[in-house]
Image (cartoon, rainbow, N blue to C red; front, side, top):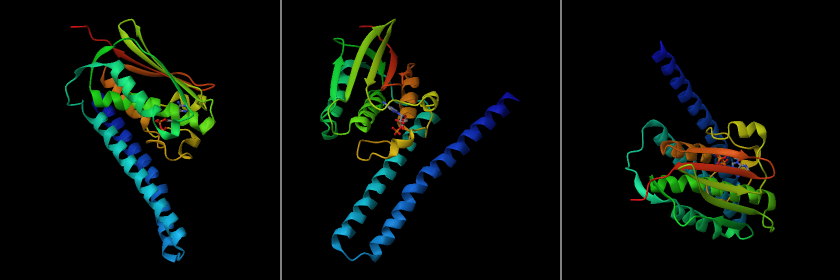
Length: 245
Ligand code: ADP
């Protein structure tokens, strides 16, 4: 009986996934169609270029959506194949921070970091970079949603040793998160109302980034939590430490 119940809930999950995903595809697909129709009627060269650019932007976002869905389904359907390797989390965090700090859209965002000398753990490098990147990227995205290109936005990133775990804290003073969303923020396709209004910052807007981050962190025996959601947001990722050889 338990097998049947499990089978049933898997089936439900699959159906929900397909329904949610199809829904996400509808808007950009409709928009591409409408824009293409305008394009057919339009003679002015500049307006035609504008329509074409808009089609390309939608295409880019659809590609991102498909990539994220494939990654999520890979993470959900089977345990990762790649072996865990010895990693230094400090190096990964520095890499991710640098990438975001240097981004032209983040020029008015202040980054601060507090990192130990090293932080050894076992993991899959690319996956962990992705998970940390999604959380830091959100910080930048939602700080910008509040401050835009004005100064005042800040992100602080710290890594500390806590009871044989490495705890990475990513803190921002962006728009914050409503209580309702906060309760299910790691579920796929869950996102805030305004998440799609800003274009042009990394991936996202579909509510898959944190679902992906959670699957990755879980598969490393770690946890990811939202620990503050008012006046900005704070996320914590904890990962088991590995011993120095
Ligand atoms: P998205 O691609 O929409 O950003 P995520 O899964 O990464 O998807 O995040 C889900 C939702 O959680 C977002 O739509 C946004 O509303 C909210 N969120 C995530 N991180 C933050 C943050 N640092 N500040 C404010 N809201 C956030």
